[in-house]
Each structure stands twice: as C-alpha cells, then as structure tokens.
Image (cartoon, rainbow, N blue to C red):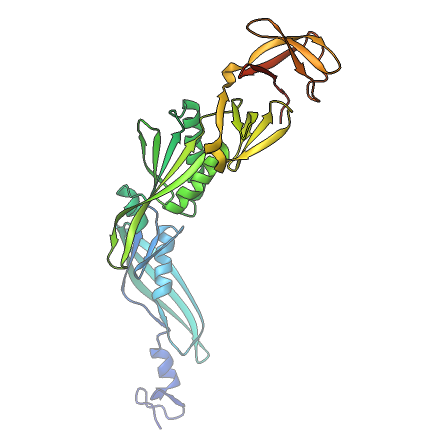
Length: 351
C-alpha cells in the first residue's frame, strides 16, 4: 500500500495516509474562534448554562478558564500541555493566543491558535433582587408597653449590621434592603428568611425578649405550583430592663441580666440567684424600677435582725438577717427598694 499524499510505500498507513503525512496534518486541539461568557456586574458570579455560580476570579482568569473549558483534545495526542495568553483587550473582547504542545506517534508537535472571548455583563438573580429591594422577611423591633429606648435601638442596629456582615460572606441574600421607623418601633427588611432567623437569634441572645413569627401570603409561583410567603418576625423587648424588679409566682427578684433563653434574678428575700424562662414572660409582673432604688444606712444590729432608716420617713425599720446581710455593720450604707410597703436590702454583688 502506498500513501496517497506522498506516494511513500515503506510506511504503515494511519487513517489512510502514512505516518509522516498524518503527523504533518494532525491538529492536537481544536477551539472555537469566538467564545462568550456572562458574569454578574455586581458580584462577579459566572453564568454556566442556566445556572449562576459564585466566583472570586478576575475577568482575566475567567477568560482563561473559558478557553481551557472549550478546547477539544484530539484522541491521538499524548502528554498535552495548553496555556493561554491574553494579547489585547478591546472593550469587552479579549483577544487570546492558545499555545498547545503534545506528542503524536512519538513526535512532538507545537501549535498556536487564536480565539476572541467576549464578556457580557448581566445581573444574577440574587443581585437583581437586591437592586429591586426584594425581601423575604421583616424583623420588627418592638418593646412591651413602650417604644424601644435609643440605647436599645443602637445596640440592636449594631448587632444586625455585624451579623449581616458575617452572613453575607456565604449568603448574598443576607442584606438589609430597607429600614423603617414607625410609631411602634423599627422594621428591618431582610433579603433572606434564613438570614433573618439567624439575625433574630443574635439579637435575642443579647437583648432578650419574646419572638413571634407571622407568615403572610404575597403571591404564587405558578411554575412550581406553590404559594409565596414573606415572614414577619417580631422581637418584643421586655417592659423591664436590667436592675428593675419583677414578680413571678409570688416570688420577687431584681433583674441582673438576661440572654436568649432566660432572665437572671436576685431573690429579694433570700438573695439567692434564680431564673425565669422567656416563655413565661406573660406571667411576669413589673413591681418596681431601678429608679426606685434608694440609699440608707444601718443604725443597729442584733444576732437576728438589722435595723436601717427608712430612706424617706427616716423611721427605723427592722429586717431579718440572711447570709448576704450578716456582714453589714452599723454605719454601713445600703441600697434598698420599697415594694408593697416592705423594704428590701439589695445584694450589690456582681453575678
């Protein structure tokens, strides 16, 4: 058999021609002359097919990636190496040269190809929602029987913004699309319901209070046949604050702090530390405020009682000693509060 290209009769034929001619005509890669990629103009995510994927690559890196994903290797090539060089940039078009090197039948072949990669800018669904003010949940900051204090609102605002900052690293829908101050409190419009729940937990862990969720029907997704809801999450801050006084199940205590689960108290009679869960909030009664705390002094002491002066009438008042008041001495100043005509000496220890 002879080669129809060169007439050689002393070489084995491969795909109808001799090895030498086959190697001369071989193409180790093929690549389209024109390529196109779409990236989000806001977050740089990449559109692959019909799905957007997160990306932290630069435009140059995305162009290189597009070339590397779109060339085709010939089946007879071994030890292929491909590199991409961007020659010029004309507006949104990157002109590239592709260097390819490989072995065909033991012979090293080097090729160069050119390709133009056009970058189209779009907006991914998440960024489109952000730009349109889209939200899935509203966090309502409220206070029981009052408007939240300036200090409370400042603290809540900082918690929300700090939490948004950490959540947005992995969730682009973790954003505040709007903040509205109304007569009842402040509303935060949050892009993601999942983010809103995590934010609510962060606020409650610091501020305490009672949380309630209320879904509202806002439409229907016809493509999936599902109703669409937005979730309103209300954080109701308590009527009391730290150092106020409350009563629960006939037990009186001073509020020394709280977290997301419970209220921490000092018992006014025994000075023991105890707690009440937030789910019992509606059964709690505020009996005095921190502003009702007065200062007086010890005037007398016996093995069983301690005598102090009433801070307003200056009449002597005898109070039974307990382990927390047994070390008080005549002349010591003490903090007291009067509730239902009874004076209580307060525990000033830090808990």
